[in-house]
Image (cartoon, rainbow, N blue to C red; front, top):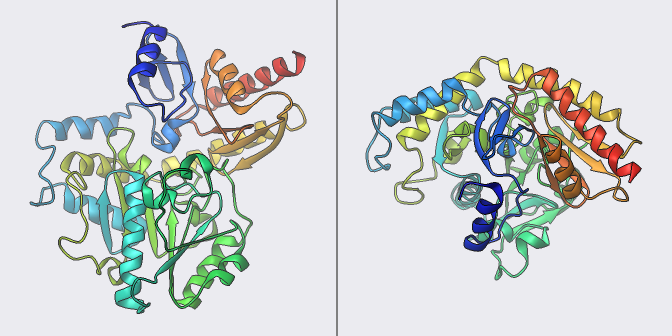
Length: 404
């Protein structure tokens, strides 16, 4: 098995079809570029859904992983290891929080946030036993575990996976009044994405995050920000909440925290919240393992320089300016912040997948979502020249559909 078609054929026969990949088989990658098994190069404009914010094979991150691989990869949390304290202290400082609870995947981090919020509600806020509720948003995407799909509004993620976990109230994203109307004495938290990624890079109205913060404070409930995709430099700030100067009670982090090398996730909160977790009440064999912490430490060091945040902000202005020029030329709407954009295509021209395949043919990898929308999120290491070239390929692909 060496050719693209051979590898795809076997993959389709021997793996569950829980994804619908574009027909490309990647073999190696450096920076913002990947190369397939037949030697063709593509500009990666997806970045593993923000897992690769710092680029493929980032030397600092790869170096940290290689060094740790030679020493120690796993102890489980049955013992301490020498990377753990640095990781927790560093991520705590980056988030401004007292404590960290590390896991592996983003979905695990969200599940952890739900468990902690409920326990906090019973033991600190004093809500009625078994009655805690969490307010969540329409069109959310927090993962695909059983609990998380219980409050999804995406039929693909939710349908036929019941019975569903109770305790969630779904409200309109971007409406503080909708949250206010849903709050009662047993509400323990509001869980939201500062920018909804899977939904098409939906940015809430100005002031929304500030108003949610004020409401949560007034009602005595936790503000939980899922910054798994939006955090760690992607939007031009360390966290998307930083654009309004808002600090949530709990950050949910993942993806870029692992530097594109290993799965690393965590929640960050102060001791009055995370202090409710006691030994034996939550855990993971690989959560906070030495290799993950060593990689996470390298990521934290990168973010502490502020270089990548500034670069995402600068290149984001270039990206959005160029994309806005395409409105009326096959593009209906452009949304996003920093080096992250959702582009709605005129559905009479092409679907998002059709456009993604046309971009692939031109050497650009992107991904569709919800029919006629594509998402662009290149590694922050991308050059301005390559970024402009990618948008030029988008313009060319759209022109080809208009002419056909």
